[in-house]
Amino acid sequence: MSKIKKCLFPAAGYGTRFLPATKAIPKEMLPVLTKPLLQYGVEEAISADMDTMAIVTGRGKRAIEDHFDISYELEHQIQGTDKEHYLTEIRDVISQSTFSYTRQIEMKGLGHAILSGETLIGHEPFAVILADDLCDNDGEAVLTQMTKLYEKYQCSIVAVEDIPPEDSNKYGVIAGEFESDDIVRVNDMVEKPDPKDAPSNLAIIGRYILTPDIFDIIRDTKPGRGGEVQITDALLTQAKEGRVIAYKFKGKRFDCGSVDGFVEATNYFYDKTK
Ligand code: UTP
Image (tube, rainbow, N blue to C red; front, side, top):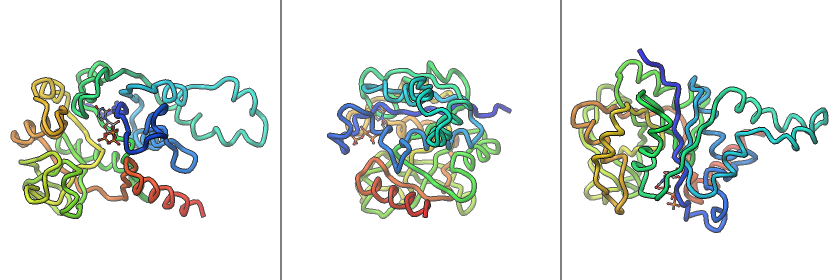
């Protein structure tokens, strides 16, 4: 049985909701307290026993590559000083994983960004983290919960949560048969439906485990909502064959792609330091 070792991070979006902050740096590098969103995501993948981080970037790629690299000048400056501990976390992250990068040349949507990562993933099941969805748990990380489910089901897994019906037009929304309180065998999914057309109140958040046949499916998926190639549309093909499980994860999720969610996450993590 193949273990999931690779995690893909689509990080090529424009992040327009955070302009002007995202004019020259990627949204995924915005910090909650002192740590960029992307580092939280990488730490979650490491805690789920993954060691290969595949990052899809667009403009502003240098800040991401530099972050997950050694800064010799900085290391030299603070080595042996009382400030050295500030680098402990990022040093740990760098030493536990490899990082590879590719560029999404045109921003044609999340499905297209994932397809751009094919060259880094190859033919094996892999995880996807959207770093602007920041998750936190007292127990197991969301991705760890999902890899355990993958071991059982051996198919694509999407993390879902209950949303207020009026928010359905911000998410991919699923429907299907409940196998237990927190597991649904998906048979329908719609990207950003109007509330009146939403098949349920269960929305996909930024955590996926995908089987590698998804790449061929995305290649055959026509642009959908907003003229973008949607991962939800590609997953529907697998769902119709009974090959997608939706999982109501345990934990908290913050939509750090929106200013409100970002501030909420900042307050939450700040309170945790007290
Ligand atoms: P969003 O829908 O949040 O889009 O993308 P965005 O461009 O980042 O932000 P706004 O809406 O303009 O403020 C969800 C995730 O998918 C990635 C983004 O980087 C983000 O992690 N993405 C989206 C890509 O990598 N490429 C795309 O073409 C679209």
